[in-house]
Image 1 (cartoon, helix red, strand yellow):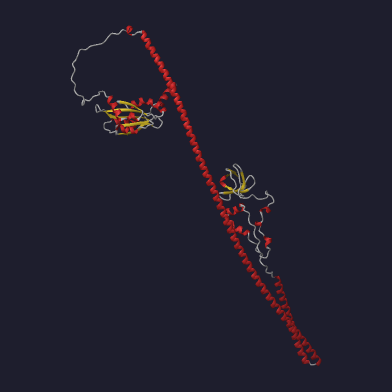
Image 2 (cartoon, helix red, strand yellow):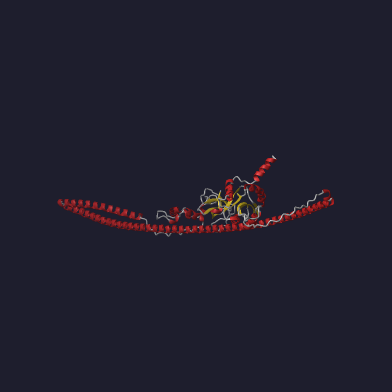
Length: 519
């Protein structure tokens, strides 16, 4: 089990050269190939993994390579440099462990140097670079020059005269360990070595303790700076959030004021329109009454004229009947005189005249009776005609109380204006008492319901309720106030921005819809 864990750990911590193996091998071959102009290739890790990949390649030498390395990463470079001594190409492996690289990655990637060197085999010089000064072109060329097997060139060296060969001597002496090694010196040497080692350990412990204190102080300073930056960011974020909320509240208040002003303007326009319609209807009713009174006056005058004519005809018929009766009396007297004179012819003529006079008198009396009946009927019709009464002055309508309940209904349902106007229409009978026909809409609401329990739920919202999300203070007596989590009942959604309802204290009025949520 321990062996397996060690193998797994080694596999996890080792460099991965197989994932991008083809690209790595192609870049390596381009640098070492004489047919390619590529003279350097840069390799690096993929993000935080151990997968090695090609970062960049170039043809302009070490100066271009130095511009491509990253100041906070661990990278490897394979470059081709011309040896100034032999004018032959030499290959340099650069292990770039930047001073700005994370310390956690430095420990891991130190183990990859051997595997990378095995993959990029054939390097004449290996350079461990930590900063840009280590990647100076002259410095690298100088190291390549010093690493050459021979520090000369056949084109530069001059011939030197051969020195004469002298006798060969020797300084060799046979050593005796017993006489050469003195025990006291040996013990003193090792004691001195032990003392130096102890001093070195003490100094090393002090240095480690001092380094630990410095690191601890750096950690504390860094944590304090991070805490200060974090607190500053939190405070700045809080200020930004508060400023945003303040802007939202101001925008919401402004929008509510605009909606309320728009609502009141609509109500005023609707009231003005309703008042105009009422005035037009009143004028039309007055014109109708005037026309009816004119028609009745004409009918009465015509009836009176008819009565006078009938009465005149009746008088003429009575006079004619009186004359006929007088003629009958004269005829009867003539008959009596003829009888007294015993004149048969005169008597016969007188009787014939008397009979004719009686017939005429009877007809005259019948005509008089008919004329009297016609005159009597005309008088009865005249008496039956109603007198033209002056139009009563309409009572002034009570001014409506500034309650948004009624106005909200008109505002939410503008199409019901004809029905509202019909409520103000007076009865069709123009001769009924206007005071007895007051519309029920003009009665105060307190007179319709004795108690609040008998009054119907205002708004007709089906008993909807809402929970307050924010607190709201009423701007006037037509609105209600509430606190967060208060329950508002009898909710009526009169329009998109404003609703009506009853607050927990029993008051009924308007409130902004976006301050509550339905439950």
